[in-house]
Image (cartoon, rainbow, N blue to C red; front, side):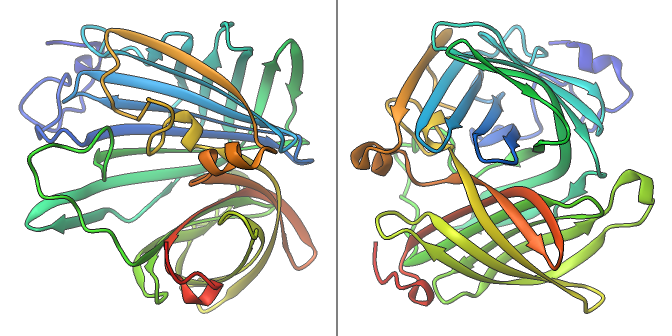
Length: 364
């Protein structure tokens, strides 16, 4: 099937753009789009998921207001024949200027959340090292990703109240990934279940100061041994300075007593030239990705067939312990970050499961 993408001189396989080179059901293309203010009043994450081998495209937004109220809208549709339209119900996503500007839009709907946000990159995108893994002979992961730091403009409306976004007091981050992705949708039937690790940490940050920024993605086991790492120090466009690769990180997190959510962080970034950057992070507001369907929430999971068209939404009280326990698993924590006398802002994302003795966790 021909699509508008087939007009461009960028084919990589002997076929059209309507399907990838593999028939793996886990083949996923995903965008992540984060916006938050510097006071901690509001955090928003939007994501699109494209699953050509399942004939699905879906999207969600999760918004947390003042750390108390969580709003979500989730939508899904049959992918074909509108395979080249990044639109799901009231959600849409537009590439305004490649690797510079993107626009995320949620039209008015019955769930009380809408927005029109333009992301403008302040620094060049960082391309992560490819991530590849096999489990029992089968490709479990084969994915690439890039991350970009920026500032937003536009507006967000929550139950009739409009928040104007300006570049002085709001920050934004985004990524784009594609390939065979771990999980996604309900587990397959008739195959051997995957192993449950004794203990595991996923850690991602994307932070920006006026003169530089940083991102890293690290996975480690319960002993702190690195399973995967990629990251760099980044510089604004105007500086015209090449990014500085990171070779490692050291971290010291503090956690709430009721859930594994950070209350503070000290992170040392170790660069390829031997320099180090000592970062202190203070959480401002948590955005709950699970509410949007990541790893499943209330009958909706990313990449799950929901019929030709689907939409739902929730308004949840994050101050209620039972609701918080249901929401918690993977949060994008908007933080104020400090390095010496410099003050910046960004996202710290942490998933910690099973045992991790360093932080006092000895079981699930």
